[in-house]
Image (cartoon, rainbow, N blue to C red; front, side):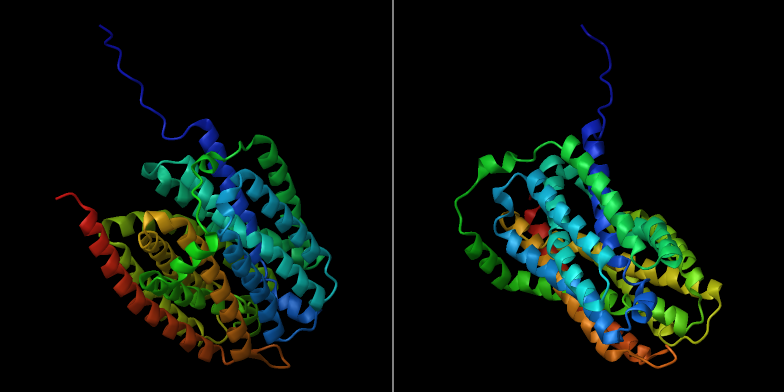
Length: 416
């Protein structure tokens, strides 16, 4: 009789570790490409001689095109090998980023952001589909945790480096950095990533348009999409003018901005996994409410500041981002439980598009609310703060009702 104890099975194979790493790095470049515009705002408005509303349009152009592209792609995303689909859209994303790097004017930069958004907006949905295909449900949360950390990592590593490059070589430099790193990543992905095509053998003859229409118009799903709209509004309204507000209103220098993003991002990485574990322990909606209270308090303080010492601004930013991160992690986990299994792909695609388009609208509204004086100072930032707080309060109400539905659904699924 063999008395040898079985060795403990590894959670991930070496290939799965590679897939997690490659998808995390993909998300890092895509998120950085979008986020880098915010700290570059002060430079771009001066160099290209654009108004706050025009800069808001540059930010929102990416979001609008990404949202529309994601919605249109959702209907046929399951008809192709996911690796080929990912390669196609990531190649287009890199080309769009190169166009941003060589854009000499506001009009061409606006067009380049539209192109980048068309391709970049689909990458997240395809990545999550690959995760669903390759990883069991028991470990999928860990995978998503690593991939979602790209948001904070882009602040810790990407934004400070991007700002330093912009300060030294001009605002085009960060886009060249992203395009260069993305090209190397794309080559590695092309060589090493295996086809992801098992879903092609399970194809079900179904009209994609009808399925999408049914998903969009289902009442409980529609409530979730509205909640996503409110969630996107808060972040996208404050983000575009953060750097300009810090420099012209709070007295922070351009050279100090990388330090703010670096420290804030480091704390976001530290608290993200802790928040995720805590939301599983005491409830997603409870963490969302706690994060909302923190965020609302910090927004109220932040949007009424005058000239502020660097250490104080960093402290406020860290607390604000902990609150926003808590809301994002908890709400994302809660929303994944809303759709039925048969609607999950369509729901996630539509929800992602809703987030992008809502963010674009929020950026435009922010550009219309905020006014920059001849001295560079931003006015009516407090009004912007009140608008963000209002959307956060409405989001709490919407998530309350969604949470009740999710709890009822989970309770019904438990064995008697």
